[in-house]
Structures are given as C-alpha cells and as structure tokens.
Amino acid sequence: MTKTPGSEPEHLSWGRIFWRRFKRHRLAMVGVAILLVLYLVAALAPQIAPYPPNRQNILNRFKPPSRLHLFGTDMYGRDIFSRVVHGARISLSVGFVSMGIAVTIGTTIGALAGYYGGWVDNALMRLTDIVISFPVLFLILTVVAIIGPSIFNIMAVIGLTAWPGTARLVRGQFLSLRAQDFTEAARALGTTDRRIIFRHILPNSMAPIIVAATLGVATAILVETALSYLGIGVQPPQASWGNILYEGQSHMRRAWWYTVFPGAFIFLTVLSFNMVGDALRDALDPRLKE
Amino acid sequence: MTKYLARRLLQAVPLLLGITMITFLVVHLAPGGPAQVMISPDASPADIARIERALGLDRPIHVQYVMWMGRMLRGDFGRSFNDGQLVTTKIAERLPNTLMLTLVSFTVALALAIPIGIVSAVRQYSALDKVSTVVALIGVSLPAFWFGLMLMLLFSVQLRWLPSHGLSTYGSGFILGDRIKHLILPVTVLAYGGNLAAYMRYTRSSMLEVIRQDYVRTARSKGVAERVVIYKHALKNALIPLITMFGLSLPGFFSGALITENLFAIPGIGRLALQSVFTRDYNVIMAINLMVATLVVVGNLLADILYAVVDPRIRYD
Image 1: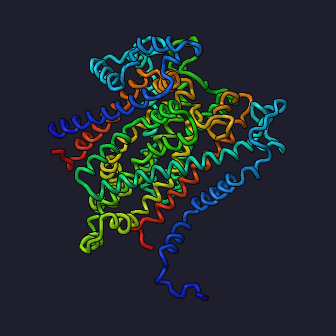
Image 2: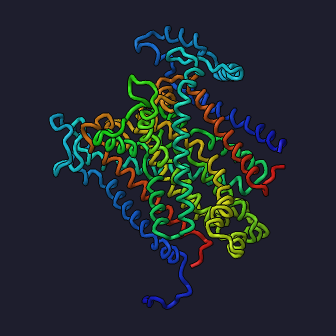
Image 3: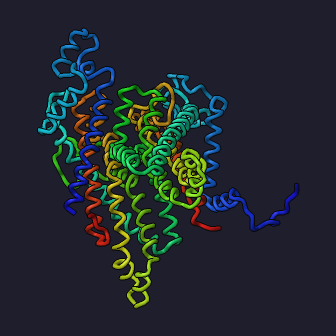
C-alpha cells in the first residue's frame, strides 16, 4: 500500500485540507503543544510532583523558588510546584466537563428551536434571553455559595449557565440548513425528524460547535478560577490554581512566587485554548476554499 | 416605532419576572438562612424560629415571593439583614463608585480600541495589525484578578508608585490627583481585560468589511482623499455594529466590577454583592440582581433603538 505523495492532488480528503489550513497558524500549533504537555502533567500529576501536594512543613514556610522547590513554598511550607501540578487536574476537568454540559444543552435547545421554529423557537429563545441577561458570575456565586462549593456543583452550575451562546449559534445553523435542498430531499423521502436532525443537519453544523466548545473550555476555566479566587471555588486543602491565588494574595508583599506561578498557568492554559479555537475557526470555515 | 417600543417593553416584563423568580427560588431554597448567619451558632432552634418569623421567612415561598414583589413595586426593597440599613440606601451609597469605575474604563477602552481597530484594518497584515491581534488575544486570556495582582505586585509593592487599595488615601477627602492615582490600576484591569480586546477586533473586522464595499470604491475613484474615505465614508458605517456589541457587553460590566472591586477594595456594587452572598443577605442579593438584569434589558433596548437612529435602512414597524 505505497502511495507516492502528490499522486492524487485533486482528491485531498477533508481532514488533509483541514490539517493543512490549521498548520498555517503557528500560534495555534504552540497552543496544541502546550495543551498536550498540560494534559500529560495533569494525567501524571502524582509522578511529576516532587512532593505530596498537601505535605506541610511549618519550618519551611515562604521559601523562594530554588532547586528544591521550583515555585517556592506557601504559608504552610507546602511545595507550590506540586500544588500547581495537581491543580491542573481540577482546572482541566472543570473546563472540559462544564463545557460538555453547556454544549450539550446549547446544541439541543438550538437544534429544537431552529428545526421546529414557531412557538417552540419562541419559547426556547425567550429562555435563552433570560439566561443571557443574568449577571452570570453573580448567579453562579450565589448558587455555589448556597448549595456548597463542591467541584461537581461548580461544574454543573458553570455548565448550566454557559449554554446560551451555543444555543443561538446552533439555532442559526439549523434555520439555514433546514431550508436547504438536501433537507427537503430527505423529508420528501419520508425520513423522520429525528433522523434529519441527527444525520443530516447536525453533522453539517459541527464546525461552529467545535469552535464554540474550544473557546468554551477557556471560559469555564476562567470562571472556575475566578470563583476559587473569590473564595467560593474548590475548597482547600485540595489545590486548585484559583485557590492558591486566593491564599497567595494576602501574602503578596512577602512571597511574590505564591501568586505569580499559579496565575501564569491559568493564563497560559486559557491563552492556548483561545489560540487553538481561533485557528479552528479559520480552518473549519467552509467559505474559505483551498 | 412607538408600537415596536411598546412591544419590546412588554416582552421585558416576563424576562424580568423570570429572572427574579429564579433568583428568589435559588436564594430561599438554600439550607442555612440569614437567621443562622445572624446569631451565634449555639442559639436554640426556638430563637432561630423567632427571628425567621420576624423576618417573614417562615411563610411558604410563593407567599414570600408575592409579598416581596408587592413591596418592590412600591419601591420598597426592604432592609439589609446585616445592619438594618435600607437596601436602597446601601445601593445608592455604592453605585456612584461602580458607575465611575465602569464608565472611565469603558471610555478608555473605546478610545484605544477604535483607532487601533481602524488602523489594523486599513493596514491589514502590517506589523501593527499583527501586534494588535496578539495584544487582543492576550487581553481575552488574562484572568482579571491575576492581572490585577501582578500590576499591584509591580506598581504598588515593588515600585511603590501607585496605591493598591480603595479610592482615596485614608483620611484625606476627595483630591483629583489622588483619585486618578487610585483609579489607574483598576481601570487598566477593567479596560484591558474586558472591553479593549473585544472592541478592537470588532472594529477591525467591521471596518475590513466596509472597506470592500462599492460605495467606498466609488468614493476613491472619484478622487476623494484617502483620509476622508476612511474616516468619513467608511468609519461611520463600520461603527454601527459596535452598538450591538455594547448591548452584549453590559452583563460583563458587572462581572468586571465584582472582581475588580474586591481585588482593589473599592466600595462599590460588586463588593456589596459578594458580601451579601457570604452573609445570605436576601434583600440585598435580590435588589442587586434585579438592578443588573434591568440594566441589561434596558441597555439592549437602547442599543436597538440607537441602531435604528443611526442606520436609516433599519425600520421597526
């Protein structure tokens, strides 16, 4: 099965075209690399962290970065590098799970509204308007403060409030695609609504959904760290990037490393997701021909 | 137009009702009410029950909601459970600070974003265009609280150039120079983290689209100076979509205030909001939520009306 490169230049697969366009964004490639490393760090946290994240050593408090403690130590003498490495697990899982919830709800609501139109559309879009008009961070804050700041509650609340953007996007896609010939043809053949939605229209709307999902992970991570930073997020002693910052801000004058490193990780992660999202938007845009 | 306005205002009613209902439900269904926060942990259940009765918290939730609604419509938002102050007084004391902070940073953001956006569109792919794209990308990715902490670390802790907390030096009254010094860091965080990047990108893409239009080519071909083409013919039309953007960025103003005010210890609505959440101050939470939601709804409506005023092609009939 040897294929000489360039033997069939006219038949580039969709994937090849996508990859070729995606590769052009050098920043996005850097983003992909950073995210891969982060994923490995999170997966192998116990192997990578030189110390257990919660091991205290009061005699060793507020030590600046050194070869023994790459990112220094905190107010209980815990190793900040180990805590940041373990915190990656929290941030990434909150990011992905919340985004998964938001995209699932958003896609379902957008698809139903766009496909059926009429009163279904009206009712669902009013609901979307309500959620969009909410001062979301305040709502999340209120809910989490009240039902308790467990990591599952945080994921659920972020997911349940972050879907309206996707819903509007998917609705727009469905509105235009349901009027296209291929949908009409499927309907004329007696295809069920369910099959038209899942087999014919949804696959054609995947591009913007994927982009929204990528950017959604970034937003979810920012919201989780903001919550932890305000003191209502993941609770200590469990380490999260946001709550290390929360502890660190009161010791800023004494230990700069306490806030610099965890924040830099949040920033790099969010930046990478945003860079990859932007490149995906470009590479998946059907209007751009190769 | 009048008919359209009336319809939009009517549509806003169920929206606001929905928002108040959801918030009310969430706040009141929670275990551990304000009575438990108010008194010492070893108070007897009878004491808690007495306080709850005094606050009307023992009634069924729908009754409480209707009662709250009735009072609210008469302009009575109740008193804070914390200090017995009127909720309206508490909000009125802090609102000016939040408004000032938000308005100043929004103005700064626009004053930078629009010119940069225009230049990067006119000189697409130039060095400035590339740099501003990266600057925008960093702006949307920076966590506001960390950015603020880093600025504090550099300018307040290390260099000691700027104050890190509050709106004026303790003990001194209002002095303009002092106020400006206090505002520099929070305004930088709010402007760069929130609006600057978004408006810059939006101006750029909107301008790029307009520049390719026929009427711009016509203007050029009849010999109009390039500067006039860009700043008179193109810019006017390119800025119209920014009005919609304004409506969309309103809820963000509040989230921004929430983080920035708590970070820089500025006595505004955002700080009040966080305190009221921690102490289960129902009346304050409800009032702030309703206020912000109303602002968002009214802001969006204003944006739509402005749209019709600026663009004569748009008619609401």
